Length: 166
Length: 178
Image 1 (cartoon, rainbow over the protein chains, first blue to last red):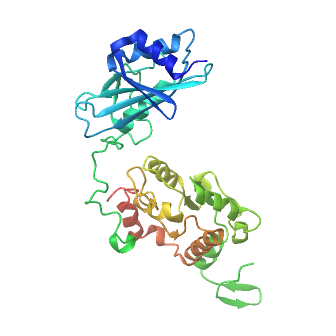
Image 2: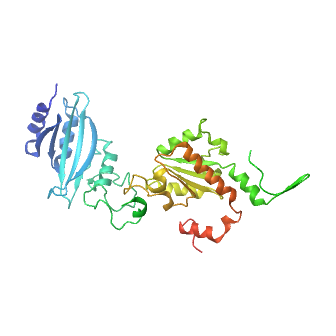
Image 3: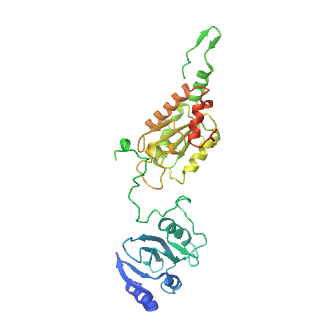
């Protein structure tokens, strides 16, 4: 039976200073690493003979506008079918250079999830074979899920006060 | 059965204007193209079914090819990414063509007041009838269809060739400005 304690020992023991901020949220182990170590950490978890985190459940992003120097966060969720356990990896990135290596060499499924994260947050996945917008219109010139826009554009004229009671 | 238009009747002949005859024919054989993207489309399925039965109004044949459709029924939220598709479908329809915006989303964007949703299809194509509701009941969709029937019945045969109509299409960049 693999539990979070065992995971911390395995990952912490193997990577030492490269992984940090271990915590448990609702029973799910979470830790962070740096962009340059992400690929080796994920490859370790995937290829480990016992842990077998062979499924990359999700990739998403978060924007913390007040978190100086680490405004963006790429979040990876992995699942070990055999051991019935999940974990979450966070990679914090500065807003000047939100670049993280693509996981497409390890997981084919990372392709669209990374495109989505790029689309909504502007996080760049270096080495991605086809990093372009996936859900929004291609001529959109911003990343809509960033917390840097007014809730409503005051100059818009497509909703009229008379009709919509604003 | 529809009533005969006003005209002169004698033994063996009936005289009326061509406009009216064609108007009656068109309004009682509107071929709708359902462009359904969400819950309004489900209401339209009920409208097509035996209980509400849109065929009673001559819209017997939902056309899934825009080339053979007279009436574009846009039902549901149209994302901005979908807008060029709606416009292309409209462009592929032959004149005379009518458009009904069914439900709040197609009419105004509805509750989806957000960056990714088109705030009403009348931003890309001209709309003849708006059906309110979220979603509208089948009765309301039928009422919208009957409004289009009235438009078709009373429309002048010259309308689609006149300057006003051309200006309307030019304002949507459907026809090039002269």
